[in-house]
Length: 254
Length: 259
Image 1 (cartoon, each protein chain N blue to C red):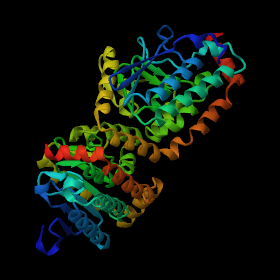
Image 2 (image 1 turned 90 degrees about the vertical axis):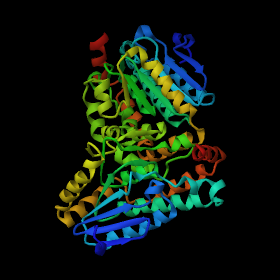
Image 3 (image 1 turned 30 degrees about the vertical axis):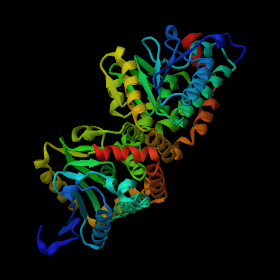
Image 4 (image 1 turned 135 degrees about the vertical axis):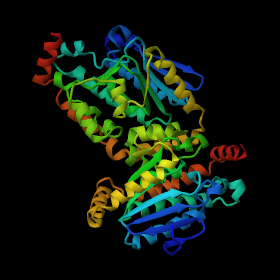
């Protein structure tokens, strides 16, 4: 990735506000679409923030949390190499969010689509604006959302996972709350960031002994599911560069 | 409750009326907080139910609380003087949850008032939970620097892991109405007066099922979701006791009790 031009760009912002680390995806003109360098920076920031803060907030700059992978770039890469880097980078980020000792609050403004929605799998508390759009409409471009399956199964009910990963429909924030994908909604999209920070401050103010032990213990209880994250990533990787994927991406962007 | 059918210790009463057994935690002056005495009484009562012909067990609390959770006075070392009491209590609670889950009888938690921490965890072990809009439920362990490790496996099974994660990491308490909305409570009465009637109606309805069909279904559900694997629950007792003994947790508990 070191030769890619975007590595020198700052694709995420990191800020320490009191005891809360606030990480924001920073490609607002592209609806924070993910490129490998962004995911590398995000993963490094998550791991680094865990050593400096007592709670972590993940949000997006601009009006959209994250539109998913930058598919326009993928459409121009018939080797599938870019798609593989994105899938691997995404899985690494979600695993890091889950593994760090401090709780993670994620705020969805506008939309969390595909890879953007997959980031929810690493969060402990998810808030969204009521009208936000959330979902995994990736089978229509010939990509498998299997990379997210293990984390979704460690979050919402198995029935809901099935329909969310296979059905391309996007849910509103309100609908996503009904299935437990989102825990709290706010009516004003402008307040997503401040509310996420407020929740993180509440978490940061609690004695660390209980919060750390409880997060770690919940991870252990959910391990039979989330330990299969690699299997899901392998399934998604298995389709990259396929004819179906290339044709469908080209139809979108070619 | 008729005297003839009532088997009780002071702290816990058990009434078996036909197909329906009712276990009442009976320390209203201590908000039914789980002391060794109450836990011993519950173990004995649940053993009694297992041997009975009842099809349904209703668990409720006397007075205004269901159960305020672990007896904080017993787990604060500066008060109890016994650093091992916390682990003894937690292990007893862990074994009680497994015993209740393993009952052939269908279990109903009738949450008459506050169900806090371990008390709220107890409701998650039951097959059905009924309450009323003004009840208070929740897992404020993290607010006290401690970890709800014994009950976490049951909360995850009841709510699903994502909702359980949010509820247990955010701490605090919620109303019966909010608990109903996240699936912690299955059926909701308008107020405490309406709860007894609702709980009775549900117990009667459950008891109308064939005892063998109920028992076979419950057993299958327990096998499917790993309820009968005791390892995680007992490991939870060890973990919870370890966190409980840390200076940070003891300081937070001490501050709470002096409030």
